Length: 221
Image (cartoon, rainbow, N blue to C red; front, side, top):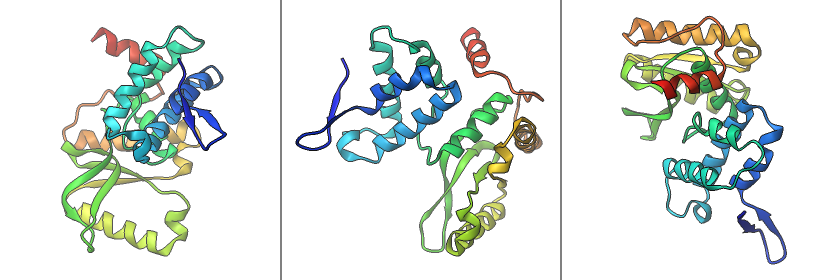
C-alpha cells in the first residue's frame, strides 16, 4: 500500500519511492536511475525521512520496498534501475557520468569519495565526485558555477592541486562531455586509459553497451 507524507494539516502527498514507481512507465531507464539517486540523497538529507538511516540503508530499503510491491506497470524497469543506483550522489550530472562509465565497461566507481589524509586549508575533508580509490583516479564534474563563482573556482584549484600532489589523476568533465555519444565515449576512454595505466582491469568498449545487457551479464557471473 502506498504511504502518504503529511505536508501540513490539510495536505498529504505520496511518498518519494511510490511516486518514483508511478513515474517509471514514463521514463527512460537512465532517467529512472538518476531520479533514484536523487531520491536516496533527498531522503538522507531530511532527518524526519531518514529515521537514522544512512544512504546505503535508504538504498536497501528502497529496493526492498519495490520488490515487495504487488505487480505494477514498469516494476521490472524499477528493479533494473535499482541495480545501477548509488548512494552519496550530489547531482544528476554525477549520475550521468557514472552511467556513462558503466556503459563503456569501466569498473564500478565510488560516489562522493572522501579522500583520506587530505584536507582543505580550513581542515574540511576533500571529496571527489567519482573515484576509483585503489588507483587514485577521479572524475570531477564542473558546472557553470565552477567557472563563474570565484570562491568555488579557488576551492576547486586548491582541491585538485592537493590531489595531484598526492598522486591522484583528476579528470574534469563538463556538460559538453555528456552532450552526445562521441563525447561520452571520449570521456570514458580518457578515464579507462588512466585506470589502465595504473594497473586497473577494464572491459572498455568503443560504443555504449545497454544497461539491460550489462545487468544480464552480471546475473550470469
